[in-house]
Amino acid sequence: ETGVTQTPRHLVMGMTNKKSLKCEQHLGHNAMYWYKQSAKKPLELMFVYSLEERVENNSVPSRFSPECPNSSHLFLHLHTLQPEDSALYLCASSQGRGSKDGYTFGSGTRLTVV
Amino acid sequence: DAKTTQPPSMDCAEGRAANLPCNHSTISGNEYVYWYRQIHSQGPQYIIHGLKNNETNEMASLIITEDRKSSTLILPHATLRDTAVYYCIVRVAGFRNQGGKLIFGQGTELSVKP
Image (cartoon, rainbow over all chains, first blue to last red; front, top):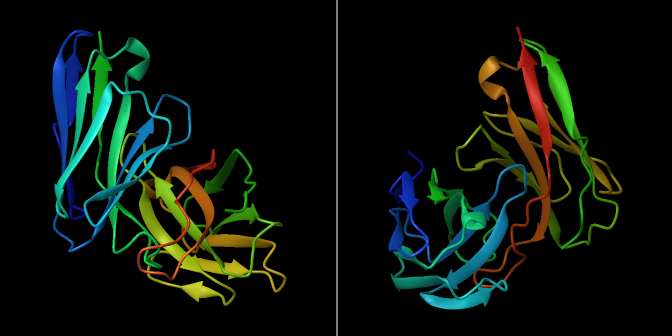
């Protein structure tokens, strides 16, 4: 256990479904991140939240909608996804965006879009 | 943030030291060197970081050259559980709510063999 918990671990959804990924951190951190890792590709940073405010959106399609209701929780709402969106979605947190201590990652949600 | 270059893959015999190199010739004076690893289908795990001095913790040692243009991560006694992709990342850090993003490259795939 890293202190960052992601649910569900696995998700299969159809292209017309709406689902949400959840991330929860128990580390007292105030910055949270969503990353996407497609097969055989490096991790891609999707969204950055600092003090519950979205500070970065790296050209992510609108079918991905993040939400950060408080500093401990981060959601990624999914709708009308495409098969190429199948990937491992990773959440991370840190004590401030510039923290020397780096990021702590969850175990990820393996998403399959059918 | 500066770019890093790592060999795509390396092998190491179990029980021997694994030395993973990283080139970061364009590193700036305020950028730290970070190492993470990712065991198959899990989230990345922080290993160690440094600015200019060599660092050691319970997992590994980090040797940074005097000109800071390259570094080596050393796993002193590699085990089969150290088989993973190792990422070398440089980023600005040290400011609570400002700093560089953690951007992952392709990393080095380390295979520890019996």
